[in-house]
Image (tube, rainbow, N blue to C red; front, side):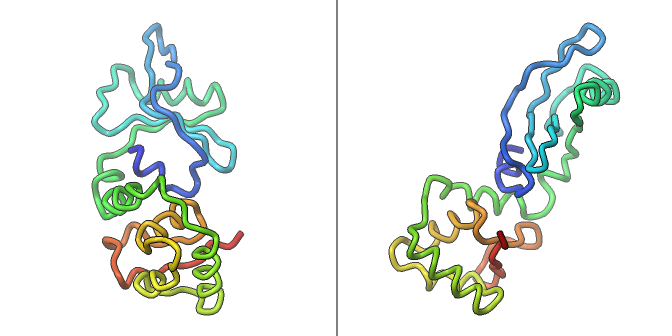
Length: 162
């Protein structure tokens, strides 16, 4: 779930095991507290979480503090390619693309609108291409579709407008 949250552009930040809700005398600590870009707060439980309190009661308690609660469905995590692609990208999370490489890639995307991932790799001269493009995706300078298929040479890369 953390990998999925890390690559979701609408998530500003998240943390594990926030303070518990007191639901009918039973404490329930959701797995995640998610802070959205729009200012909303969301509490999530992973699909494999055994919840000892009715989820509608937890949702009511979250609503009382102007938040939302949801227990994720297994398909949201494991179906499709998002988790696989997120894991591939996140192994480069500590990498930072140098300014020169970032400018070259963004200029090329300005000229062409979008480019295949293989073409984008040619813009990197100061750092290794794969860590560089992964860094720019994770930092929100460019975007790729993480859901349709595994990242590959033909994956379309687009600039994110600011």
